[in-house]
Image (cartoon, rainbow, N blue to C red):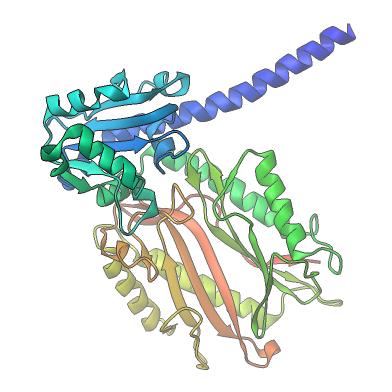
Amino acid sequence: MKKITLFLLVLFCTNLFGQEAMRRWRKLNQVRQDKFDLVLPDAMRENNIDMWIVTNREGNLDPLYTDMGEGYVGSNAYYIFYDSGDDRIERAALGVGGYLLEEGNTYDYFGGADELKEFVHKRNPKTIGLNISKNFGGADGLTHSAYLELSEILGADYAKRFVSAEKLVSDFRSRRVASEIAIYGEAGELSYIIAEKAFSNDVITPGVTTLEDIAWFMKEQQFKNNLGSSFGMPSVYITGPDGVVATSTDRIIQRGDVLMLDWGVGLMNMFTDMKRMAYVLKEGETEVPAGIQNAFDQGVRVRDIIKKTIKPGVTAQKAEDAVYAALTNAGFNKMEGFNKYTDLDKTDVIIGCHSVGNWGHGIGPSIAFFNPVRLGYELKPSNLISIELFAYTKVPEWGGKKLRVPLEDDAVITERGIEWLYPINPGILVIK
């Protein structure tokens, strides 16, 4: 009887784990089908690309490998998309296959890598987009040797038709379908739950716990939930009157510390980016000091203005200009650069509302000074974006020195504007 019970338990657990693996695979297949049907036609046509070839080699996979459906890759493999003018883009996989890809029902044809020349010549595309990019690593998957090999296989006439697919990749990835947004919301839920648990007395004991203890706790939660990481080790740091004191080190957390964290998780090819803030009460304190609380409240005011101001249908640059104009009208001071705060009695602000999605930093339109190329891209409904800001406010308890309050949560752009994907940062977390 004990052996039967043990067998049933093992069978149940195996089936349970198999169900989760299949659940994630099925969701990714739905994303892929929706993206190929609903996003890819416009993305190819707007960028005047008749055929898009994504190359892979065993041991050197393109950054879009998961987007394409993965599969077993031999020495050479190609995902090929051709616009014949019909509503549907033709899709073929040459030199790549296997259960996960073939059972996903997203490709029309599977063949060998040696069919590439015949496949392309038969369709005779005027332009062939390749993943060559000066600006985005995610759109720069084609190696030099693969480029030379494509040129040799297809011939000189077709090599003249090669163009960069940089903007196509950005559009394809950043224009989201409902199935992707649903996954992103799930990833956001896991992100904030783990982050807020990390900044609690369940994990932190003042005078004992170190910053790296918290970071490793968060990494362990990623491991247990089979989650990827947006940025490697979570950034868990202490901010004082003179700025950042330590980040994810063996520095022991003390009473009176202001804690920050910046991190993200990966779930089914979606990666989050968010921040949280906590205060460790001193002996005798029952709440956050008024000056620190005010600094946080000023950051929330900035966040509210950003949310109300950003709308689709304009370039990211115009959206940035509109945000800073609204902030200035509300009495905030626009900073000249990151960490270049002033001694003014006003709250200094700088924003970095960047694209998110398939990495913690995505490659779509970006309202951020550190993404100059993508400032020129138009904001579209369904774009995922991090609403990120840094607000510097004087704190009387610090002798008037300014506290940098970083706020960041992820949202989707809709026809109505900015809409949150999960419960955002509600306030300063308190460690007793």
